[in-house]
Amino acid sequence: VRLQEGGLHIGDMVRVLAPPQHRGKVAVVEVPNTGDGSLRVRLQDPFGQVNMLVLSPTHVQNMDGTPVAGTAEAMAASQAQVNAARQAAVPPMQAGSMPPGPGVAAPLAVQPGDRVRVKPSLASQGGKVGIVEMENDGTGCVVVQIQDLMGPVRLRIHPVHLDFA
Image: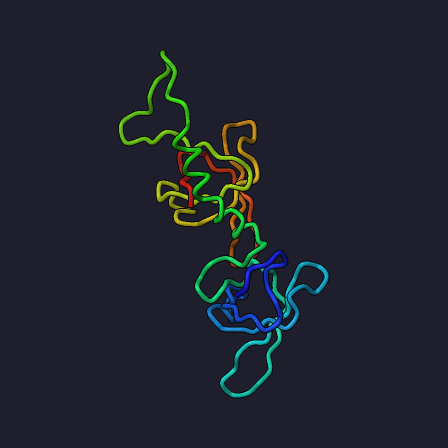
């Protein structure tokens, strides 16, 4: 898939992530932007049937498995090195502050737009990847949007349960 400001182009091949009945199928982009941010694709069908779908760009990926350019996922993925450098630059603990207990990691320093993965320590959401919408909701939790099979879901997660994706 050629990368450019709009992301996808007519004729680009993509792999469908959702809806579930089409997950993993290969499609060709027919209309890269239908006017509302969606795209129209034609599924590759070995029997010659024509199946058209209108999808959000977050419901497809490039054939190499990378997010489609222009989506929040792609922009966050391209900033992964910046995130790692920023995390390495977190100032050391101040004198008199208590370090985390044994086996407990220090909370992640995140900013809106960061791509994060939920650690297995939060069993119900472990392994899921999302985008930070708010670094602190006032209770010390991070608001993360995760793409679920039914669409986007916003979760409040304590930062000790997050890693950069």
